[in-house]
Image (tube, rainbow, N blue to C red):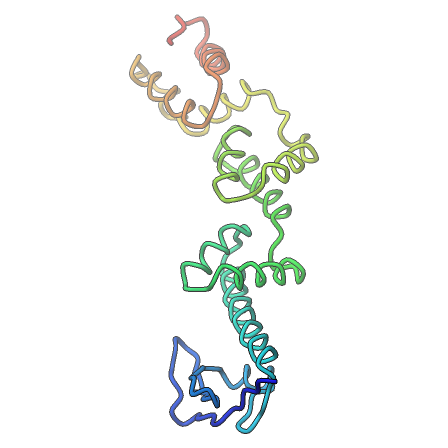
Length: 225
């Protein structure tokens, strides 16, 4: 049975990484590792400790996951993110893929990550706010954030009541909010109409709804494609 013994734990020569201080741990295999005071206590690593090789390797893996978990919490607390976004940020900070995945599972279990709640909140903010985006655009944005299509469709279905407003009416609200001074002035021209249309196309609105809304706002004008 192969045994790994902790030869020394040298706190006085600890390395500083970011805001934390890491103690140098040297094993009987003449390998160096670094742990915080908290990690030494948590994983029972002290000078003179002995572990079976497999147990030691498991402790190293647990330490990697624990560090990834703490980094993930810091990310989640600072700003709400999707699971995929936190995974990307962890791996960009040097966290190994397996450790990142394990950390994300722990974060989900403890309520730090919930893509369904994130999706509900995101939809509400976009539909109730002043972005005037269509559901199609919002779905695309959520997909780019890494939310699964199943979750997106589930939330949209359950929250359908807040999305069933007629497209034409929503366009009219957008125009009246965004271009109030322009549409109530006397200098409205063809180029202004084109500008408004382009803004609406970018938000995912249907061309037929756009033309209907514009004609309803300005009366019986010639339809501009």
